[in-house]
Image (cartoon, rainbow, N blue to C red; front, side, top):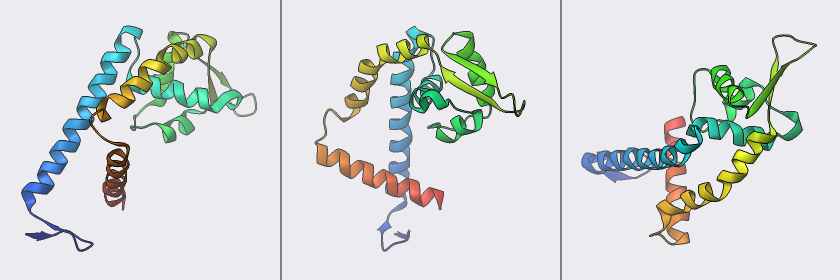
Length: 153
């Protein structure tokens, strides 16, 4: 047995099994979304950017603000926006006050794409939890938030 903090004691194999299970589960979830988005020529991160911009409304978003809200960190939000702009899903403008500042907005085609994906994404979000009760999902979220908090401290 190894002491692991907060009065919790476990064997090493159990903690390793937990980590492996979390990573494998996360990978399976990410892969399922990649399959969902592939026919649209969209990645999961691009989808995330479009959702952020839809939520920002008329304000739009700067690359730094978009980067802060992404689910997973990416090294270059500007290149991500380049690809979205080439598809016509995003438009960008430089500030006339500060030429270094760029703001991005979702376009009508980007909004239409998200609208088309809303139901399939909602269904995909439920799928991994089909065998669990609401209480079990709530407990899982609580446990994972504790894991995340321990890693971030």
